[in-house]
Image 1 (cartoon, one colour):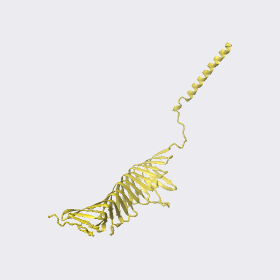
Image 2: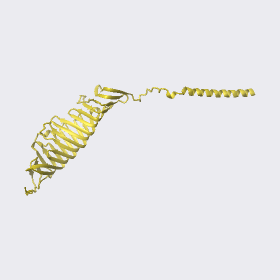
Image 3: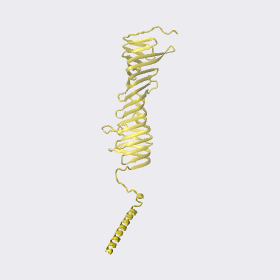
Image 4: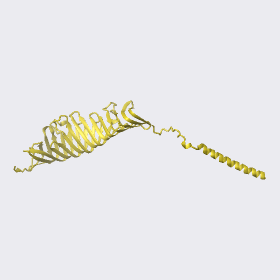
Length: 337
């Protein structure tokens, strides 16, 4: 009986010793595993990037070139199709609906980001582009959908040459949208500009407004909100305005103002400065004849003269005023010399 009890006790201790041994062995086999190399993961979710210096990058989509980019440094993600460039210069190619090549967009900046899947290009810091007769500078420029639309923001400056009229239209603003295919420009926020003629002796026209559209196929500039025109000694303000670029040398209105028109002109009369003021609902300026036509209950204040009529014509730098259907109050007594 005692022999049987001793055998059971011995067997119990042997079993405990075996459990302790195998537990220690398992810990030894895993000791230092945290220092072992991480096994490779073949998952496609990992981003694979390549880095280059002084590289020329070229992308083709549907057998047609999309972008040609040279950069001092370039990062390429093979997974999500993102290209980052530093000091980039290059070309974006775009096409019409028939697949015909349009004017390419040339660009440069300090930094750029290309989304290959969307065919989008982001430019930042000293960003510049040029396409056809237009050059554009801004802090940020976004070339969308293979050049379908260009959006610029912060310190925007554009210069566009109008081939048919020999005008150069220079515009500054905070925001601008440009559709190269349609040759349409839209500007917003603190818009200032200048229309310059090719010949130096021809008059320039400066302007400012809240919103502006430049339609180059129609040679038309349209403005809305706080419109101001300035030329020589004349300044005019209104709520809306237009410039008809094609009419510079024609006997047609070159510029027009609408809604709450206010005009001020400085004249020199016998060595003295004369300020002429006018108010109307509509103003039309004929550059070729140096005439301004006021309609819509116009009034002209010239020295002590008050001139009213249905239609008043002012000749620039000339005191003479032409009035149709006049209702005029004129004071003939002028200050003695």
